[in-house]
Every structure is written in C-alpha cells, then in structure tokens.
Length: 339
Image (tube, rainbow, N blue to C red):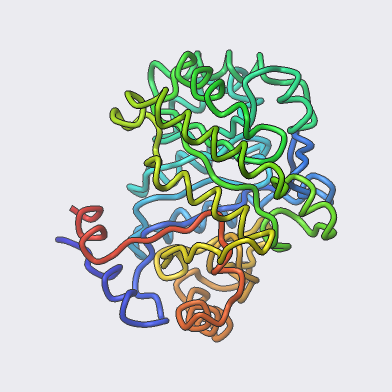
C-alpha cells in the first residue's frame, strides 16, 4: 500500500511521515578542513542504543532513506551495525564521507551501504592537503577504486577560493576513479550552525573574492564547452545553468547581486538527529527538541520544530535565502519517489 504521508507534510507544519532521516553519528572527524570547525570540538558518538532504536522506529514513520553524516560517520565504532539495522527495517542507507577510511572498511561499506557520497575538493595531493588539512588523497582514490565496481559513488566538491580553477581536473579524477556522478556546491559563507561554531573571519576566508568572479565565470564557460558530454550523460549532476548559480551566490556575498532564492522544503521532508539526540529541521537551522528521551514520532512535532518549519516557509529565516544546499520535492517528485 502506497504511503502518502509525505504528501500531507506539504500542507502542514506538522510532519505526518518522514521520507529522509539524517544522522550525525559522530562529531569526530579525521580531516582538518578550512571550511569546517567540527573537528575542533570535543568528540561525541551517538549512543548505539539510540541509533538502533531509531532504526526500529523508522518503518513506522515511513522512512525510506537514512543518511549517515557527521563529523566523519565511519569513525563511529558501530556505524556498520547501525547501517545493517536500518537495512533490516527496509530503509536505504546513504553514507556521506571524506573517504579516508574507505579502503580500510571497503567490505563493510559494500555490504551495508546503498549510496556513497564522497567529499572531493581537489585533484592533486598538495591542494587536497591544503584544503582538507590532511595528506590523504592517494588513499581516498584507492578506496574509491575498491568500492566503485560494486556501489554507486557520487563525489561532492565544495567550491571555494583555493579550488575553483581546478574543477575540470576534479571531474577528470573523479571519473577516472569510478565516480558515477560529480556534484558541486558553494562553500558556506554565512551559516554558523552547520559546520561547527566558527568566527566570522574563519567563515569568510574560503569564499571567492570579488576579484575572483571574472575568472570563475571563465571557468564555468570552459566547463560547459569542454565537458558537454559529461553534462549530457548526467555525470555532472548540475546543469551549466545551475552551476552558474554558484557564481551568483559569491557575487551576492559581496553585495554585487541578490542572493539566488533557492526553492527548498527539506524541513518538511527530513529531520537531522545530532549525536546527542537533538533535532534540527535541516543542516542549517537551529535545534528544537530531542529524541534522547522520547520516540522520534513524538519529538518530530515539538513546538520548536513546528515554529522553525513555519518560519522558514514564510520567509522569516535569513539562513534559507543564502542556503548552499537546498532540497526541494514537489508533490509529483514525491509520488515518483514513493512508487
């Protein structure tokens, strides 16, 4: 029987079902990225009992996908056990990873994960070490080659001042090591919630400068020309037009344009559970409620979360107008996902 509860979500700030569940399995991370300060905070792992309880509750809420995030999810000592529990509940498992542990844990990944998304911010070891703070690119590429024959891999590149001239090379490296999709998003320049508590100078430093914008426009023109086959095949997840929104985003950050208004209804289709059980409507909005001491079905519709959903829906949350990673599913898209 078709579960139509996600469609009801679009008509109310109270969630009836939950298509996507995002778990921050750990705050620990083995990268030292320029664009994220999570690794500076004390490490917390989601209690195994909490994660397994969420797996048991998933089917009753209509959860179709769970995404393991963090921190570095693969540093949780029981991540594969948790993945297996969600699969046993009929939930597809996605893993968002920096890839450092891929080679070492390849067997567990292949056995328990349905979709792998790997952060790939450089095509050379030197640039990778500069951006990510660790010399790990060769190890990551070996891990990709171990996984790729049996599991679809999407790479995701955070476009920033250090790498925007290297996007073509990143595409080529990803393709050569088995990626089936390559995706790009802008480095976040404004949100203090999603990547650890960062001082303003830390947030701004990786962004493109106003002087970089003409060169970035030329890079995007060259991508459209030189990678026409990769756009047509779907290897590059975004269209050329959508990639140009990245240029508009950086221009807006310098007051040269209005921020692109991204369509998004992620808080009506998903929830983020932090390592300690606190809930967020999405990566970029504040916490409201917790599953540490109550079922997810009850915690989903706390007064705080309902207020946050209403506020983003009515345009009251400034974070949403500047979001680098929106998610939108209309009724037709949801029906396709449910079939």
